[in-house]
Image 1: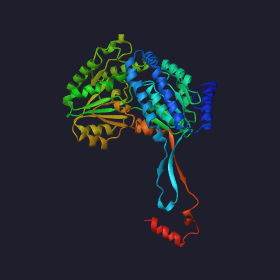
Image 2: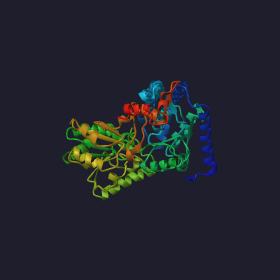
Image 3: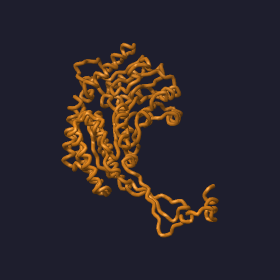
Length: 473
């Protein structure tokens, strides 16, 4: 067992898993009505407790606007549940497939079958939304769920566990809180599917743990999501659209714009436009209640360390407001120019309100720059030149590709969401989420007439020669 968790504690976690497995085994195919009931109960739980959820996350972050929690977590959670409720009946219908002539008479269909017990590991940055999103898909598919919340959001974790366990039987949904050892023990359980959202480094550990049980995984990771700003779009317009995507949750977003690729002669204008727009959306961010704090001191010190290293490397920091330690863990948005390629800000996922800007002559150079690096979770292209769309669509790989905006694609429920390569594997949201948490089982049926017996041995009879001429060509 690859964990430091005490044996009694691990046994308790395993007992919860076994209870879910037994409960699923007793009722392995919930009806449409039962699934809708579960989704509706989860939805109502969120609607009835919006203020308490927002306050818990405000406490965990040490400063997070209730409006930001409603807009970035409650709203997409409710919309995702509503989408599943509207489309669930169609998703559950068997898909009838044509049977080739040589196998007739027969019928075939694809039946979406629940996998069983699903494990979901939730990060701290959007603790509600990144729990509810995969839960909605898993419950829609008819599964039972064990959900491990982050130790970095203890107030939310305690509240959500209380709310869920007041509504759902623990053998249908179990909320697990605890430290990193609990998370490791959780990943060691033999789930029927394991869903993880978090860093690439931890994702590798989760995948290794799952491999010991041959548990299939969906990994929603991060990485450095690039932005290319083309000459065909005014820098002011691009800056206006990028500030929201970069500064929501103080940049602590897996699909946040990580760095800008910009023609050299436009960099100064872009920086000024971006800083001006920050002041429009978040005036005096250090003391602005709409602007979120960095989650904890460890993440805060990591980001401050990046900035100090950048200064020592000769980079220029363009602050939206003077940095003041009196503002607690709030770091004002800052653009950074003149970075050497070896800088940590250009090598590591930032996950904060720091925006490096890299000179890049044109779109083809941008494509080459992006393709030389690990495949990102998102790619944002700003420009009205029509040639940009086929160029970036066909020549780059990313989890998602957005033209002339950022971040919002995550909340488009009928689009699959997921990474590629270093940014993850697998998809959820919409019909792809339902499929992820289902076994798409082929079901083939024949009746009394059996035409296939013509192909039985002994071989080289006339019927085999006819079959060869008809079908092997």
